[in-house]
Length: 64
Image (cartoon, rainbow, N blue to C red; front, side, top):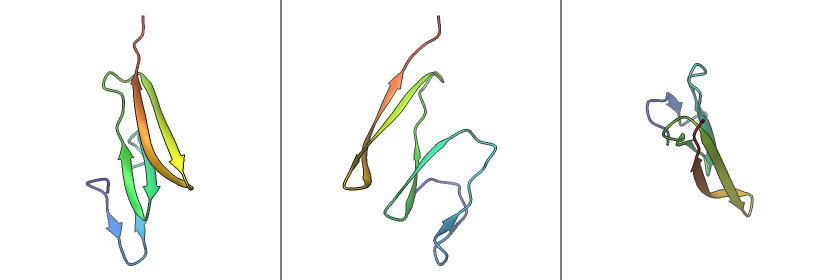
């Protein structure tokens, strides 16, 4: 689960900071924060299997 987020397990809800640029995935009732490219440029590719996210690829690029 993504850290530093307020979670209510009874209601199955989590509060996120809308001022932070981030990508999240919900899998099996858990919120997972996807890592960002280290230098700020790149792609996050998520693969799915049987309707669930199963793995991801983080591609890094750079500006010229």
